[in-house]
Length: 375
Image (cartoon, rainbow, N blue to C red; front, side, top):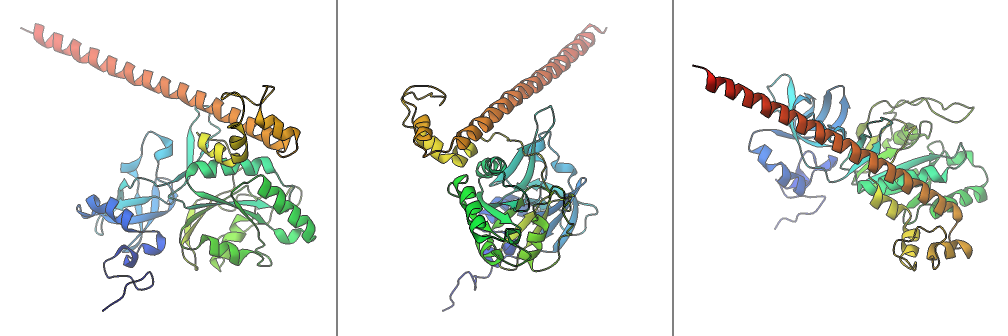
């Protein structure tokens, strides 16, 4: 009697599928079934570039046009990590015919005055936030990334990169502790691509799933990606000595297969990280404040000067750092402002659509009236 296991999968099972190393499983196979009946190929988007994308399929990597999957909503555009249905061999050019529904998606808001979102990675299990130790630790920025990561549906992990630059182990331990205090429920790993410190631990944590690597320019993402891959797959440029900032070494989002299993999406450096509909993400990023708030006397307590405020009491007795509450308030205000602007944009778009429909209906009625009066 034959025995099936993850290392010896049954023939025809999802685990035996050529795309299994890229995350293909029984659920994706089920979702793709209607497209398989049409003779389309399944594939995962590994790179997007100017209306075209590279898709890894059972037949290899193909270049496909995205013309048929260009929505009006910018957060629904084709993105690295998407699972797609593409034309089979023979069609030139090939087209992406459909995208499978995303399990998770990492968004940020753009700097656009139209309050639009931007998708950075799709179908991600873990979000690795790279934070360089070559510059002063910015806990507020880490909390911002964490809110977006939790909101995406992925599990965040903070990698304190360039740990070899912190020569004093006691100082490094303090930096790890400060980061852990700002990241409840999140693993914090000091890593150094230069010395290899922590790289094996990080590789083991990411094995078997899909991870996205996020951070500012100069955080050492491409160097860390190369260390995880075991090869120079990503171009690396030195950060500026003046401020430790990078020069956008990575310009596209690339999905790369990890030797220990799983895949990694490397992303360009992010100078601006605006929140995007991150209410639940904020609640998880500041879980201890949310927990304290449940014990406030008033259910709508704003934690400013209300009597019986458990959050203010925690600050008073020192169990909650005031910096955490200040950061929570700042990000909550930003998220509320963005939600209001987004609602206004959606209302304006609906008004435009209704005006267009009204104008079209009136035009058709006038044409009908002219036709009826015609002798």
